[in-house]
Length: 115
Image (cartoon, rainbow, N blue to C red; front, side):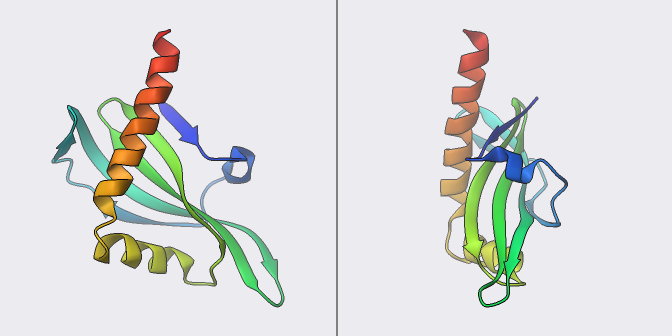
């Protein structure tokens, strides 16, 4: 089951323009949830001739309890927005925060289904 926790999610109802796999060996367990894969996805929304490309970058976290796609970043970030976000995530130890945020969102979504 896939959940989307992105404001104005209709902006990302298409295939992403590009993606980077951050983690894929399925050996991280956090709070009893196995993380199988983490990807950053880039959706090009529009282009401004002065500001460049406006992108929505999301994180797709695949777990043994389902998938959750959450907002990671958005704005006028230029042509290389996805690679810059990937580098920032990996080099600044943001992966643990991203995992925790994703799991909180996933558990909230699963809790709403169980009620």
